[in-house]
Image (cartoon, rainbow, N blue to C red; front, side, top):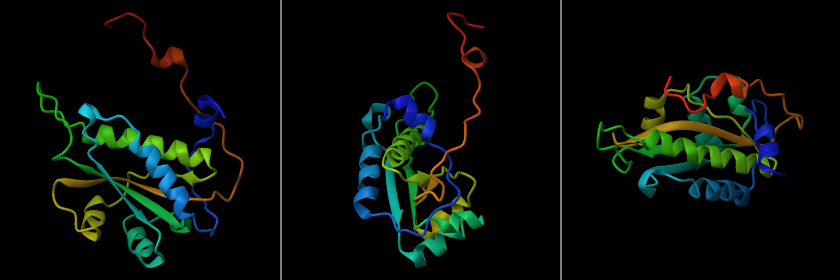
Length: 172
């Protein structure tokens, strides 16, 4: 499928089949994340793939939504703020941005091979960091449940128009 079709097909899946995701498919989508660009190519990311039911149960304690528990895999995207590039003029840390780009690659790759994902940011990051015994420079940026969607149809996206978001050749 072409890129625009793929981007239209990706949506936040909130209902998964009980079928486990094959390890080779999880590796395939992580490999897509590793191809993502990052500032100065520092690649300040780590991905924890959780498929063991007992670990998933603990991870679900970080995000209390019933649908979250239906995914048979979850990838926790972690940013390493010590390894991220910081803009010299103001110290802006690009770790979150770099990890976000990698997550987007991962999610699009998952969509392409028939897997569903959802980008979860509203979770208890402190509890998640405790579960994984993360040092203070490592931050769980997002949790991405992965699985086979219950439904094969995808909702129509509601997006702003180009005229609403683009300004051509203007400083205003």
